[in-house]
Image 1: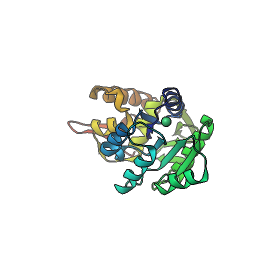
Image 2 (image 1 turned 90 degrees about the vertical axis):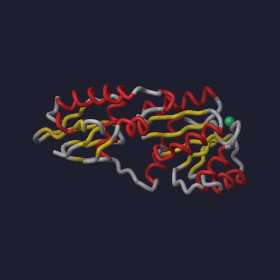
Image 3 (image 1 turned 60 degrees about the horizontal axis):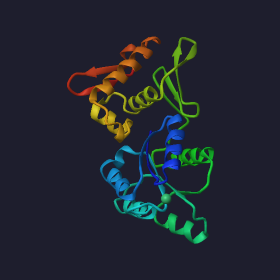
Image 4 (image 1 turned 135 degrees about the horizontal axis):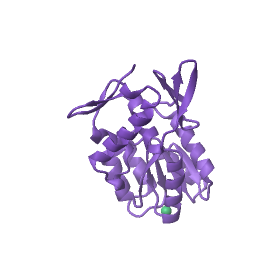
Length: 229
Ligand code: CA
């Protein structure tokens, strides 16, 4: 799941990015409001949530919220701020923010707020995603596969987990490498298209250990298709 973070304090931005990456989110982090808007404007369909600091160079977090809502984006937004007066909270919520976190805060609280936003977002996420023999558990970030009577945990890296989730959300559809990159890689990473192929090879190899080799099919010239067996 991809998140846009707009935060101009380098230490805090880095700490948030690291904490979210550990939870298997993909985070694009930019440090000023104009860059934030550029990312949103061209890519908001790829983001599932956004975190805006209130005071930013360029556009403020409030202005980002207003622009998003004017463009009819339903993207859930969490505002970060040192302000905690009632008038400021009202201004933030009126601008279209969904929730509000006052600095300083602990990463555990940030993660809990994001999970709550996720639950309330227009495409609600349940705790599990189950398809065929595979079950993806969001609470523990694990994937298990049904093997006869029992289920076994498949040990995946964060990127493999994200890839598999993306496939499981788009079963029987052709997904191109560009779509994968847009949805699952941070913009700064600028990966070559063979990065996607390489990751998919690794994921396939792991799935093959559980007799799931045929799940991800290469559709030549177009991309990949996740088949239900
Ligand atoms: Ca700031």
